[in-house]
Structure formats: C-alpha cells, structure tokens
Amino acid sequence: MEFHVRSVADGAVSPVLVDQVAAGELLWLGPACDLGLSLADSAGADLLLVAGGTGLAPLRALVEQAAAAPTGQRVTLVVGSRTLLDLYDAVALDKLASAHRDWLTVVLAFSDDRDVEPAAQGDVLSVALYHYRSGQAIYVCGPPQMIKAARQRLPLTGVAGDRLHLATTFDRALDSAVWMSRQRAASRGPLAVRDDDAEGEGVQGSSGELSCD
Image (cartoon, rainbow, N blue to C red; front, side, top):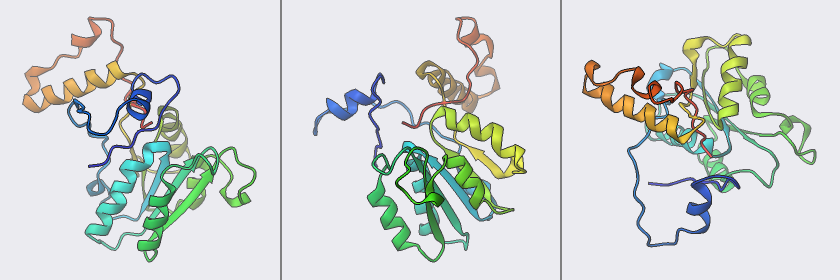
C-alpha cells in the first residue's frame, strides 16, 4: 500500500505527515474512502484519464489495473502541473510510459511554465480536451477546483454524462466525514441514515469535493 501526500502550506494534516512523522511511527487511519473511480464503469471504452497534482495516484492505480488484466483498451493519461519542477511522481510516470507504450500515452500539461514546448502549455482540462476522442470514457481526479471546472466544462464540449467519471471530493474534512458516515449507514439499510442528521447541526450538504492533495 502506498500513501501519496503533498504538503500544503496551510493544510491541517499534510505538513504533519510530510515534515513531522518519522519512519516507524504508528498512524491511526479512518475507513477507506471510495473516490468513485472504477474501470468497470468504462464498459470497455478507451480511456482518457485526467490528473491534477496528487490526483495522479488513483488514476495511476487504474493504469496499473488495466495493465494487470489487459482488455485491449487504449489509455491516454493527461497529467497537469504548474511547472516542470512541480511535476508529481515523474519517475513513476516515466516507468509507466516505457512499460506500456503499446497502449498507454502519457501527456503532460503545464499551466505556468513558458520554458516547456508549446504543445505542453495550458491548463490540464484544455490539454485533455485536445486529446479527447469521441467514445472515450473520461476519468478526472484532482483538487476540488479542478473537479468543479470539469463538471462544468466537459459536458459543454459534448462529453456524454455516462462517459464522464469525476472523483468524489470534499471541500472540508467535516463534509468528508459526513459523507463516509452516510455511505456506511446506507450499506446497513435505508433506515439507518437521515438527510437532516447533519443539517440539524448546521452542516451544509456535502459538495462532494475532497482535495486529492
């Protein structure tokens, strides 16, 4: 099992994990959070995977899953970063591209780096749309702002709703806790959860946005 953590300057958790936790220390983890990204939902279509920041980790797992059980799907993985120096997990990307070059294409997108080739300049969604081909299933994982933009922009370009798969994310840790609680309650039966449980305590309805950073 791998944990991918990027330190966010004003974050409540990531600076502690990156800068303070030492090898050998014990960590208490909550239940796994299903991001809602499953290869089964692609129905065998070719894939366009769009990753922002550490949102690459779940999409890299999908590539590895496809490699473990080949189905003939062609995969385009578009990875966004602010600059070349900020590119996340570049070594793993290079290994993936080299190992599966017959069906995997890795594309890089840099939103704020004028030193890279022009074709690699631009925000990750714009670059992804350039590589989009009709019939592909699109999976998007990244920061909340990116997921929100994808939800608004991609359908306007003709991407069918049943072909678009966005990572479940949360703006606030409390929202994610409420969402996971509801998921566990729902799995136990329809009477175990009430919509007004959280709202009665002043918690707004979940926006469905948890940063992958």
